[in-house]
Length: 316
Image (cartoon, rainbow, N blue to C red; front, side):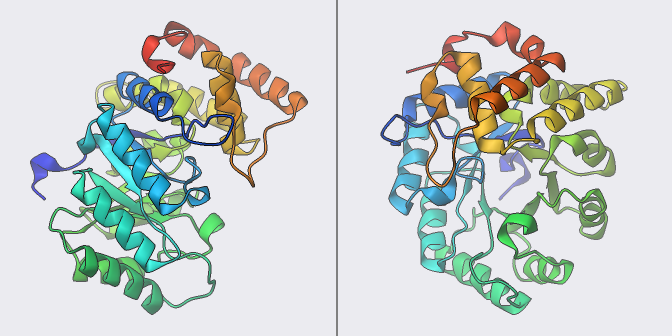
């Protein structure tokens, strides 16, 4: 893939997936949310990541989500699609489909059901996917989320993957929450694009030479995160980073997906945003009241006020 076709650095939202009461995907609402994200600080969007409840959808549903987003006009070259599954054939199917649609990249979890596996086994899984997809345009971003997957990408494994597939292994979303690990990845692997999995490290990762952030909470904090990315090289953005970090801290007290969906429901006036696939459950009313009060105190309503009721945020 040429440099001109590479995904841009910057702020990426790991998009929520709006659902109807019967838990089918509300494709129109997802497209509307995607347009809103791109118009308000996001350089790109991740579909079917953790925040999108990817592992609660089957393979066909996941492919339909991408197809519907593209048919609604979301730009393929600004999309990263989650394609990592426990079963290699499922990862191959999803990855092949995503590449055929011209997306900018795929975000791949390691096979995550079996724990304490050797690097050799994880390498073999990625090797099979890359070989079976067999497309020169495939750009793989490793999804390092050891708290959830319990299968980390070790430096030795990353080095081996980069050696075997230098034009395919493009970077990493580091959701470890460990700043030293993120910084080490940037320093150890020049050209390997490291995205922080939390916007609390957005300014730090940019100053260290990383690519930006891919996060859940930029579903709602994207205007502020986007401002930091747009201006960080020209101005001191540390006060804005502190404000962004405070908002992130207020939200992550609660389970991220139900908390963010509750904020979205409040912002858009659409109760459909509250729908979650099991095993996710909504916040209690007390939790929701505390979340909304705390984020309001920290300025979230002010950040979003100019966007309230925007047509592209609530499109049907």
